[in-house]
Image 1: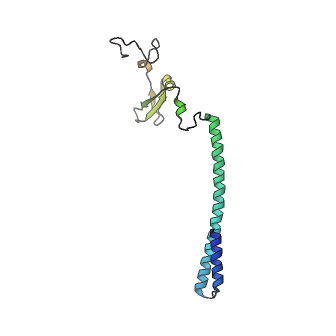
Image 2: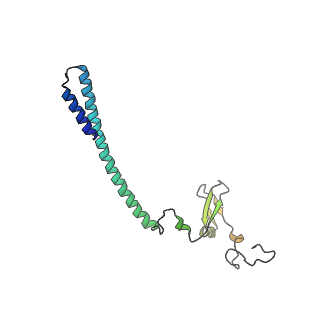
Image 3: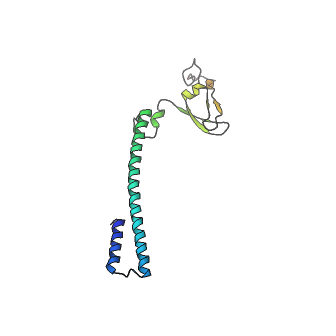
Length: 151
């Protein structure tokens, strides 16, 4: 039974009692039933509005999903975790000396030589000479000779 049906039932009970409408108590009870009826109508209006809002939110969500697919492409594996974004290269964690924020960077960012910290704006500089020399294979020497740092 809906709220409106319950209010109608309550009004029917009151009429069935054939109460004297001149008594103060009956006037109070009648006023309370009228207020309950108004509240029930308001709740119905709110429920209708909520249904409309939910439909609009679903439409907006679908539209946003379409825009995201257009901008970022669809997920190949469909897991929504972003794991496919980093399959092509390694990520490195760099700690900003100013604010202590840990920033993840990839090799392309390291090759730039520096990037601003996304937290405080401090310029983070990268010296890649220690990683590999252009004459050596990528990642450093792999000779494994005595005295060489590649061991």
